[in-house]
Every structure is written in C-alpha cells, then in structure tokens.
Length: 270
Image (tube, rainbow, N blue to C red; front, top):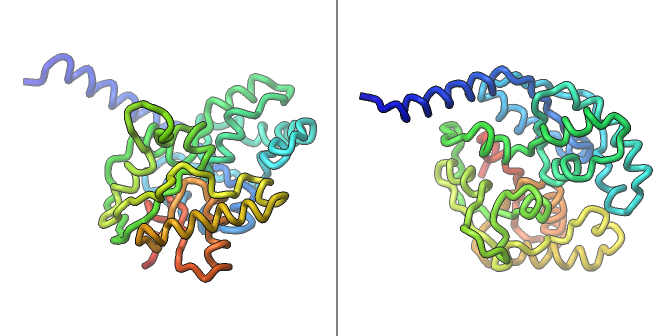
C-alpha cells in the first residue's frame, strides 16, 4: 500500500510535469554561435525537441552585449540590452546554448527602462545544462552513445556563476551537473585536466587584446588534454571550445571539440 507521503510526492511531481510541459519556452541562439557554428544551435534545438516541449525558436539573432560589458562600455551595452529584452520577455523560460551568454543576461542585465520585463527575463533564462539537469531533471538519454574518453572543460562563468560544478578551491560537497549529464551517454568516460578549473584563455575580449597570453593559456590546456590520453573535449561554453579548437589546429594537436549538446543528442562521430 502506498503511504500518504509517497502519494504526496507523486502528486507534486505530476503537477510539476504538467506545468513544465505547458510552458512556452523561447530558444535563443547567441550571435557568435549563429555566425560560426550553426550545428551547435541545431543540436541543442533537436535535443530540446526530444522532450516534447513547446519550443519557440527566436528568429532575431542578437548580441547579449557581453563584449561591451567586458570592456566597461555600459551605455552601449544598455542599448543592446534594451533591444534584446523585448525579444525574450514573452516566454516562461528562455534556453540558451551558451553558459557565458546566459550568465550575462542573468547577472548583468540591469539598465533597460522596463524593469518588469527585465527582471522577468533575468529570472527565466537558463543555459542548456541547467535546463536539462535542474528543470527537466533528465536521468536517461537512450539515443546518445559515444564510447570515448572525453575531457570536460567547465568554463569560468559557467563554473562559478551558473554553478555547473563545485570549483576546486571551494570546500563544499563535490558535484558536477555537466558530468552527471555526460555520464548518461553510453560508453563515455569523463576525464579532467590536471588544473581542471584554470581559465583556457578565451576570456571574451581578453583573447583579442592579449593574444600571446590567451594563446599560451589555451595551448597549455590542449596539451594537458593530450596528457590525459583524450582526443575529445566538451564544454557548456562553445566560446571556450572555439578558442581551444583553433589553438589545437594551429599547433597540429589531435583534439576535437564538441559542444555538450552535440554529444547529448547523439550527433557526434568518432
């Protein structure tokens, strides 16, 4: 016989399930992914569609103003913010295939005149890892198979602001949302570099104005991956992967970078 507590938990879960699947979900593709790697956007969209959600692709590609915020151009960033907020305000949740852009919207959008829409957007935005792990609570991916050793790179913003995992300098119970999702992929083995939380050197505009330092940091990363015996690297931040893949190719290092949704949706090939 089912206990009252079990019935209560079951009812709560069913109610949560019904509410979730009635939500209007906006899918926002950051400008750099739209321009440089549409496959990342396609894989993420197809992955979300597997869960029978009411997904709406937001057609108007726009920048979230992260580069301007990085450089301190707050007035210019504000104008871009005011253009973007109305595109996102009509959705119950917004999913973004980029940790760094998600963090920008959630933590740095503050200057648009319409504060009600602004705060609604900030509270409703999730990157794909948060949405799958925290909202959908995915516990199986039967279509995903990748029988390889894969290095997991948790980007700085996703690690410390979106809390994808426990930073190694923080003395708290260990956890990793990204690793938990990757472990649902048949055959995949997650490994880490020796200095697992160290920046790869992308750093937004940092990789532009200090190319020598950023390049060396990226080279240190990909060489570390080779020492771990891995040929593949993944992350919830495609910006970091773009930086690392370019450095690997320039230095003839046999490393392939895949955005996490490409692996979770079963789109990658050996």
